Image (cartoon, each protein chain N blue to C red):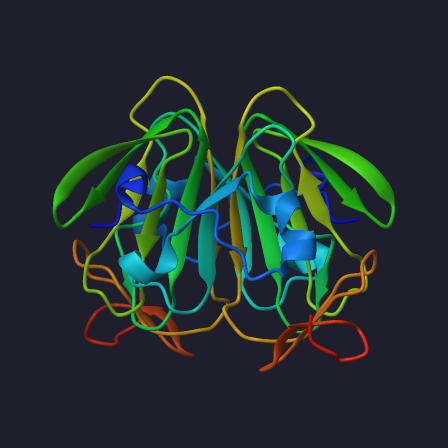
Length: 148
Length: 148
């Protein structure tokens, strides 16, 4: 039915990041909402960030629009222009191809919860702060293309 | 910048519905987030439903996925399977082509707020409860194709 039974969807902290960069997202617990609900035109994740957790490594996508909608708690949005506090009801958008790496970091003592939506297409993803790049079709490599 | 200044975006209750069916959505105040923020792969609306307001006429899209994320207040999601209360943190999904008309109705005494996201493509939209149909490229007509 249309109303999503969020608790019934398995929650995971799985990541494709290489071990060097994975610990930042170990407290990122997410549920993929689209596959069980039949959405195909965009992906949607329900994300809980435990205290200290990052939503990702700071990144921007070449060809994938993203939007984040804060539901509860507090996170710091870090991007090229600085740090911005995000609370319930706040929205942030990341149009594809805009070279502005972004990440949400939970610096509070409580969980924060948000919904993240993006187009489920593969495209290159850039990580300005670390020696990692997501190559379309190849996966995570160092910026020179060599494997981890 | 990525964090959206929601208050700075103009709010409207405009509708393309013919007068016969427009009053239900007169208390639906929305802001289109995508155009000012640069998103192109999906549309995103910040919606305030005043007490008594409907989010739309009950409808389903042939070729447009939709997702609704409740931010505050309470609304009743009405669809083929009945009535479901939606509150902060609840999510509902409406995959394209699923013949399940849906609408959110604010039956409470307070505003409710949600984000609605869908693909900004034109496609036919069906209204099971009323003699109206959205024809792709033609706009709102009666079900037999005649104009209002």
